[in-house]
Length: 56
Image 1 (tube, one colour):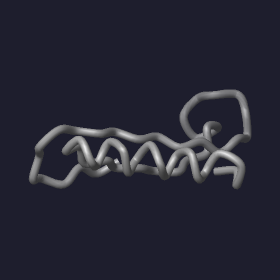
Image 2 (image 1 turned 30 degrees about the vertical axis):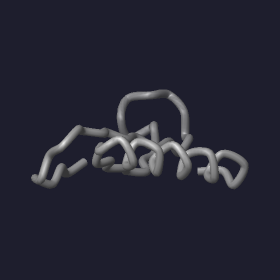
Image 3 (image 1 turned 90 degrees about the vertical axis):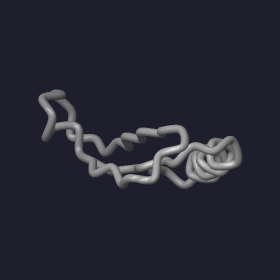
């Protein structure tokens, strides 16, 4: 994740956490998922009030 966006992303994760969401993040290369670009991306799933873990 680029340094310009990272603080905003972390702020968003903190905000969701304050609302009771648990967030799971994974950095991945888009070329590994059928996208014709060699570009890194971040996938985040947020769930409300769940005690179980979530693997990405």
